[in-house]
Image 1 (cartoon, helix red, strand yellow):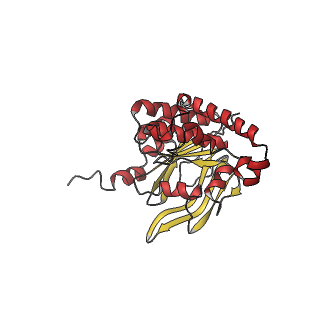
Image 2 (cartoon, rainbow, N blue to C red; image 1 turned 30 degrees about the vertical axis):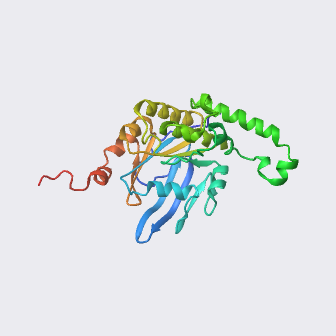
Image 3 (tube, rainbow, N blue to C red; image 1 turned 30 degrees about the horizontal axis):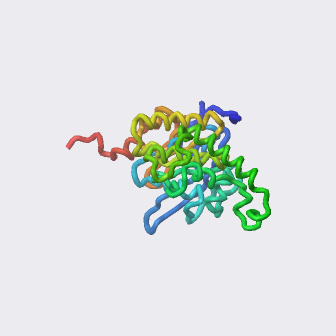
Length: 275
């Protein structure tokens, strides 16, 4: 059932602006590698039930921010919350079980498992995962329900006919779809996509964008990293721009695209000068 969506109309287009109903809140978050400050975010809120694009030039800190929020990396300092609950120090698998999942720019499919098995290993609360549960637990009905759920997810993403194929044989675009289908196995509230259209042919890109819109339709919050500004303009409710680890702009897509700080970040401060 889709969650109620709050309008972002009237929200000021300034970095760190409060949102009407934030699902993710970040405060004083810092991650450095040696002398390089990869992430330096004072405050950021992600609005529930929206598609939020995270843009910025290469090296801006976008993927590092994803890694920290989802438990794949640890910052030097900072706090972040999902639905008001702290996520600091929580490992990635528990973050996923709490409702925030992510995909990767370079897909992480399990090549020697079938497409169906790739989804089933992601299901929550599997009694058979423990030794005693596998011997004495009533795991068969759970396994059957997980298989039905996995097949439904594959059907949703157009991969049902490949359920028995090895994941290693999928194309790059199909692996992107597989990751999205697998993410839904944990019933997420927030889905974070790292460059979902990168390396995907134009025909499949349109299919991916429709699937992303459908996640929002079904009440999920989507945050995705993207370099293609046409894609950003087409499907985003809100856009956040990073540069050198910091937030430099956020707001509606059209407004952010015209922001001088964003243009400077991509083209350089002297892009309009003639020498």
